[in-house]
Structures are given as structure tokens and as C-alpha cells.
Image (cartoon, rainbow, N blue to C red; front, side, top):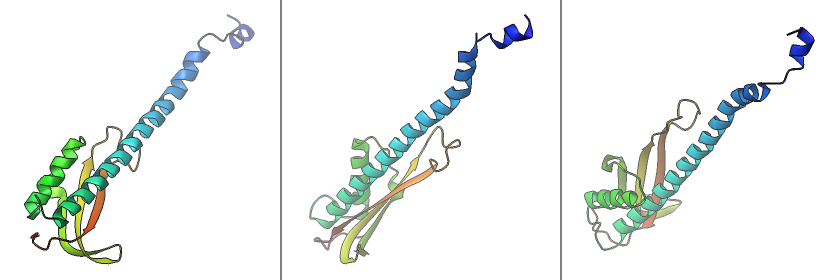
Length: 141
């Protein structure tokens, strides 16, 4: 084939364009999915932390710190998160958002992401905190 004829040949141009753009598109797509997963995990942890702080504050099934950990892990499991009981923190009387005398529960979840090495910020823990005014003074830390 002569040079002018080869320059006008467009066969394979689409394959080359796809090979150049597909990795960028797939990384963008997977990044959006993982960011959505991270935001979902944060929302679930916030809801679980608030529910556990409320349980610790009221008369009921959360009488000890172990009960609070059990409540938080079972509630997170209901949302599909396997929460480590060692990552559930409880403070009996604390200052939350300027209000004294609150039960506070903090949760930490290690978010495992298959593309964490490619997208900065996706690796690491997701944390949440929930506070509720203490009505029951019998919960021990």
C-alpha cells in the first residue's frame, strides 16, 4: 500500500479509539459506584449509631456497653454491613453538639474497595457518630 492510500485508510480507527478511552471510562464508572458505596455505608453507620445511642439512653435492651455493641452490630447486619464489635465505641455522658448529658455511640467500618489503589480517598475507614439525650442513667460504660 502506498503512503497516501494508507493515510486515508480508516479501518481499525474505532478499535484504537476504544482502546484509548475504555480504561478511562471504566475507571470513572467504577469510581462512581465505589463513591456511592462509601456514601451508603456512611449513611447506614450514621443511622445505626443514632439508633444505638437512643437504645443506650432509653430503658430497654441496652443495659450495658456489651448490649449496645450487640445492638449496633445486629442493626448494621440488617443493612448488610458486617460491623466489628470492637469498632463500636460508647460514651455514657458526653457533650454532643453543645448539649450536655448525652449518650454517644461512635462506629468505624473498614470499607474494602477493589479499586482503592487506583482512586485516592476510597481506602480507609468510614466513621459515624450518634448522640441521644440520656434518659436512663443505668447504662454502664
